[in-house]
Image 1: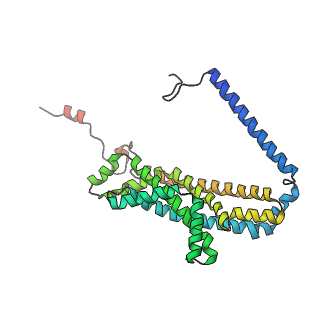
Image 2: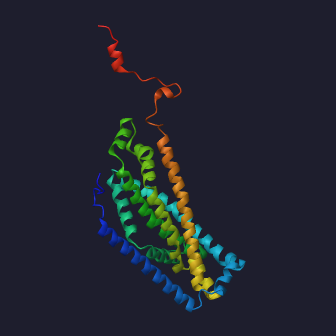
Length: 303
């Protein structure tokens, strides 16, 4: 069998050498840029041991990092829950046969997908402050949660809609064949499969929610990025502070991804085992019935 695929031919020796050369040059360029940045930071005294020493004290963690981490997780957690609820509702609404439901849901989804998250944060922050909808100390949190919920809810709605459309048409037809209504087929058959299939994309969107909480820095929300600036101003070590906070973001996102992948694996395994193995021999199952050999039986019938 040839090494070519449907989309492209396998690279020959010359192309392989070209790819190798480009890869080596790219690695060298990245290392050179990294060395230049580190050298500049070191020349400014930002990478000395004294700049990193404050992170070994309890004050920085209890007064800055842990409160900022709590603010980030609170905003992300509330936004994730609301975004999933809003996303599923809008996604199902866009699949409705009623134009009175489908068209408004489509307009809402397309509008909030197009508006930048930061613009929504600034607008809702000013709106809440002007009308005093929340206590003053909650303006920033409410604005962050509102903006992240609206934007990510619209994205999740589109993921749900595309996930349902990607399912075979026979799924909904089978539901109707056994007497289920369209809404029951959507709730019992289509949505669980669509959400399971789109879970990797949904996980990626949850990571986006967590990272976008840093935009709350602009409206004075006390999250990790703002705490990093406070640490840098307090200890004159802005670069190490941003490096530490960046490492914390990477760790949190990695843990979130691991947990979500485990949930995805459990859901997929549960879906495969719900109907039992399709190739199992019935006679091997408790109470099973041995298969009937029709050819043998027809030969044994007397004329």
